Image (cartoon, rainbow, N blue to C red; front, top):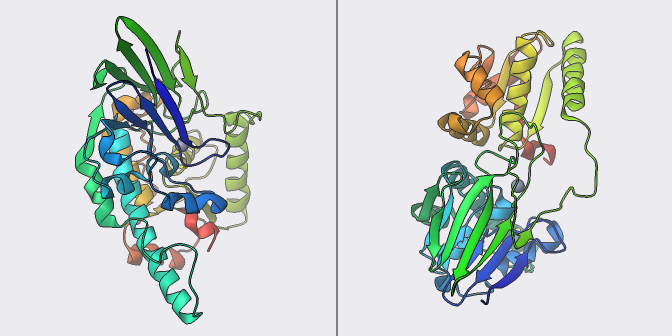
Length: 349
Ligand SMILES: [Zn+2]
């Protein structure tokens, strides 16, 4: 049996995940990620390694842009086959791609104005890599699958998605490829989460595989136990509240914002911090939190128990979601101590 596996991104670097699996009759792409390291962003403009129309399907591990962020470029080039992922990944990817399309548009018009003003030309085209419209063209291709349920993705090729414990909906993808009575199993880890992360099930353990393609971003370091980090977080909230200050937490919209809500809710329930108003001040984080609410069956036992007891971290009395600019501006006029979870973009300006 002939199977060809090509590493087209996230090889000797972190972002731009993309793998091509070829059998005699089937071509599959596992992930189609954006390069996000500054020095490598130019690679996003390169043509695809294979003609996008030649692919039979895309298998998407999760909704981070370094795994899904080039999907609109694929559809720009007439790819119109299924994109398999969990339903949660598909829903979050929609939000991420629309936002990415908007940023690409803004970035291109900013560059255009700047180059005109400075009377020079940049290294890359002054057009968006893709637009919000391009992002929307991806949506009809999503074909959601349930964790653990095998799906036929090509002739003699079966894929299944398994909990990766990384972000909501994130999966490890197992491919079983059968040809002429022979079978090979390949597992793509996608990004792997830590054990006992809040809300999510732990990563899946597999008994066997012929080949494993594994991420290793934090493979070389030991992380502090989660409970120690949580304790430190509670101490910072208390110290700031004691002085009457506001606690402003810049946060990624996916997973980190929901984790912060989880801990704040937990600390308040346990009496470890005072009951302060909590503002989720990021429309994108709010939309993603709604997706979390749509998939309660994906949560771990502890989180399911909280929901049964009506102690959801996404719906507690002190939590306020600021969807509009006016609501967001109103935060400036607040008095006393408040906790404000804001988009991570504010870290850089
Ligand atoms: Zn990731």
